[in-house]
Image (cartoon, rainbow, N blue to C red):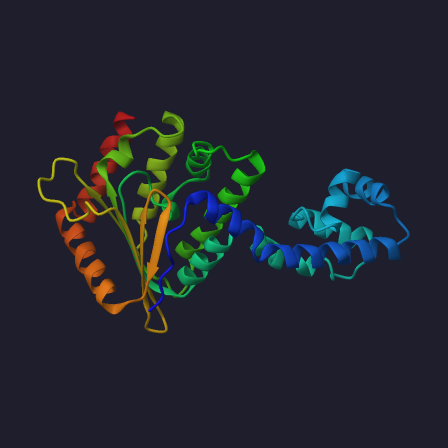
Length: 284
């Protein structure tokens, strides 16, 4: 059995950013410094050549800042590194994401099926960039802008699951209220509803709406995610107030699978749900 104990959101955020990213960023930083010195340039001269400040270059070389792909490409060209610096782009991109997101992305990359019930906002894989950014800006305690952008980039990157082949079977159940609460403003919400309609047309995606007027509801315990991987394992994740619990215990998985099945049966059908989302969009 695999179980991740609940932690506070703040604890998880701090731990996620520190673990795993430090080593790769320091390694990349040392390589940038070595190639810069080999070329006989100062940090200021390199910064001027690639349109970054001296302080930015210094932070990259010390492993304190994750270099963007464009910086690595430009530095590679200016320093005549023959692709040695550009080759770090994928490693750095992964290091930019929090550890729990990297782990979740790995599970999703191996998933042959995924089911998710969400009750207070649009499920992460379905979110537009602006909707996700609005959610992170609502976090308390506040996140700084750089941290927000890193979280948004990580969330958007996970959405590669929709274009993967072989295509996994993806199922989502959204509470009606999540479609009507205008988080981020009405313009953001309209774009989000349009995104749901777009994804709902994919052959491997089913989006269902749980109406608020249901008198019987199997999802009162909170959010549920189920991921079945190609190696035969099924993972269950339950979340409440940023407390996450991941399990592979078969008895717990069976309970979550049964609960999710009932939730789907109680919700509108996928066809009815898309019609409902179109109606809400027209009213937004």
